[in-house]
Length: 265
Ligand code: ADE
Image (tube, rainbow, N blue to C red; front, side, top):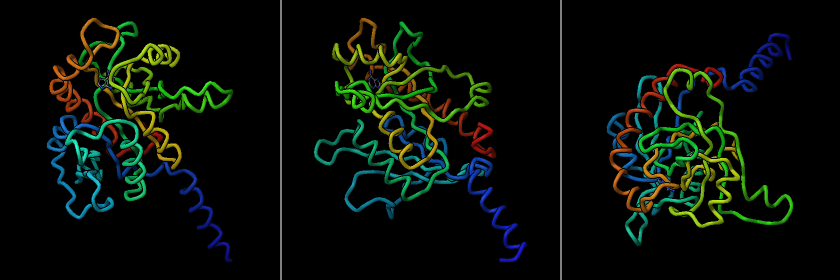
């Protein structure tokens, strides 16, 4: 090997070991509900992938296109084949995250959608939160160390500059497969110190972490979990309006990301 080759090897290694120095080029945005996804699909003028990147027969949908210098992919897990409702929850979220990373090798994952908020922690309807940490609240395994595995606490990718620039609230996100909360869920959410709760975030964080892809979580509050209105009613009542709030915040985040490296976020 010539000294020249050695030098280029070193340069290459530096690039590989500092991927955050390359401008972000491909982002995957995972969104569980069609009502949440479509305003953003329209905003970014994305088109549905007809020759799906995903296995034949799955309901998962990829909308893609270019916005500024970014290859944007919105991934929606689609409708349940039997029941015709959005495939919400951790199982579909983990599967589409895995398949999207394998197929698209994104530089960054953004999980966005609606969430329940806790007024005791400062959440109000329509607030948009950037999650600082994510964890599960419905995986109880009361055996030492398995208990921590169940909670699955993960810090999200740090974005101090994005936070300085945009008016987003910051809070911890707790994930479970139910829209409502049992007493045990509530105790676990309090132990997680969560301000918002959703049905996908910690599962997406698990897969992103497994495959070493940075992930951030943007959640807008449709219902107040510790309020006096029934959750399902309040959620359905506010879903469309709050999805419109995400249609403001997510493009602001994407605009901020455009032209930047991970380490600039
Ligand atoms: N998405 C919107 N509201 C929610 C709630 N209360 N729990 C889980 N996910 C939600």
